[in-house]
Length: 302
Image (cartoon, rainbow, N blue to C red; front, side):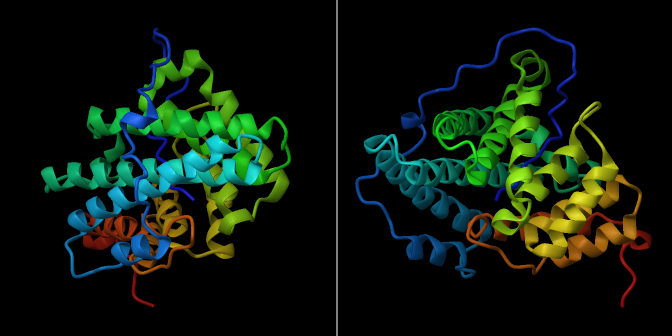
């Protein structure tokens, strides 16, 4: 999984306008003429001899080619649910890496950003990244929803419907997302994934619910539910992404020292297969949070 921001997902905002039309996904992904191996991409992700921005940029190119290959395979066998899940997963990974890279670029350009700015940095991501993310996630949503028509009990497909919807809504902004009805669709898919298997993929459904309920406005926002969901996710799988998101919810709940403790855990917490490429950036995002905390909000040493 799968790291989502719901800062901009104000689904009850008043406004007008139709949902944005995504650009063709082929204009975002490089042709898969020579797809790299998984091990090659993983090696780049963990090559600490390269500065993080350069490493992430190289990784993006490799991941885009892996995504293009998965997409071609799914197109060749449109009735194969496993290939559909592989393609929709890759599309989300490619989109999510773009979001984290763009977020860190914004913070690099604003070195004196407050914690509030750091926590809401996705709201300032440039249009180019938004457009690419919208294209990738629109295609991922299409693939996941089509496969789910014949495989309604596949937890991975339900989860990816919700994951892609979250970033489609983010890219569209609050007014368009409200009128497009993204919120109810996201909640249905998210709740279905939890019903099927809340612990799937290292508690990814619980993580999604915690992130969404912690960041969304009324009537979707619920810090108590968010806290409970992410607490369970961290207990099941103390991954960097789970710790980072749990820290964010704890901060929003006013539990500042506990939030700092989770962010500190996220600095060195491990990844999993779904987050292996984005976790170095999540480590850095945790560091940026801690860097702007006043001493009184840091967790006391154990």
